[in-house]
Image 1 (cartoon, chains in turn purple, blue):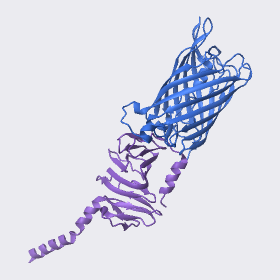
Image 2 (spheres, rainbow over the protein chains, first blue to last red; image 1 turned 90 degrees about the vertical axis):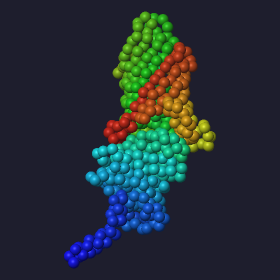
Image 3 (cartoon, chains in turn orange, cyan; image 1 turned 90 degrees about the horizontal axis):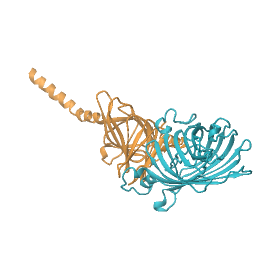
Length: 212
Length: 296
């Protein structure tokens, strides 16, 4: 009788915990959460084609695609401490975001289909990657405060702090962009040599990604 | 710097000006020039070598002038900057070997008045001040100082629908050197540079599979004219043509140009000039490479 009761408890406990297992798996894929929001931002979980409204505190996960409407803005705090601000009209997919046991980023890969984002990338004490890809190029950093904009046929990068490598998807040629500089790459071409950005240029992208 | 070196070499008080620098407007990078002064202020360092055979012959005449110049550029704001320049000159004098000495100290201020990114257009105003009596008379440094208002234009052709000609760009330079005292004469300087940027071709027009270092080169030809105004005290007009090429690295450039005198008063044979340009704003963008006052 006691043995049977134990079996029932085990089975019942397992049945109770079973639904949590997928949640835990999802939790392991959580990349960050929403910490700032303006407008009707939405997330397409896993690319299923069914965008759901986002609200403050919501988690975003690997394979999620985030959509910011023309009158919206969004700020995410990622699990490694990095902060990503999305301007209006931005569409971003979290392709990868791996965190180690100490909470440090191992690799992050974002896909920017359109729009503009600002990334304040948390430093790590071991080799890691943080890359944002667009249709025409890829920008990779370690720790920095920077912007990347996906425009029709071109990608533009501006760097406030640190440095960014912008690589052409077509030619694989790249350019190093230091702080206070910017560069762009156009479809099918090498990156344009970097140059200093004016305060007005930085202010334009700051205001577009400034989430209250 | 090249303007001053030429002026010293040919024995006139030419329009002073700092070394060439690369300046960007939109996606256009104007590479450092060696003969003409630069287009705009910047946080830059230039190391320039310049050698030009001269017309002098016989005892006491200068037959060749060699100059080593260092220029440091510092921005005050994003549009305003200063330049400090020092030139060490060696004059080969008939019967006396080579005389070495410093040229007068110079400082200049420049204001980037217009920078139209879409049209790759730049206009800069400059004012150069040469302090008389700070250099060695034996290498031609004048005891009289001079002040030189300057005007610069730069225009890239990237906004025009001209296909493979879009990498072309032109820069111009005009200045009037006003001497403090006679017998130093006033001088008008005018020049231009025509360049074809292969990096621009690769990044804005069509990406060819060009091998290094060709894909980093910018063929460039500079032309400089100087003419005395008012009482000339025997000096004559000069014209110098300098074809060459500039290689752009990441944060640095190296350029070499021949110097072809177009008049006998300019020189007497082919000279050469080379320049290493280090972009301090690239390598030290968070410290000495940024304007003293800037936002952000």
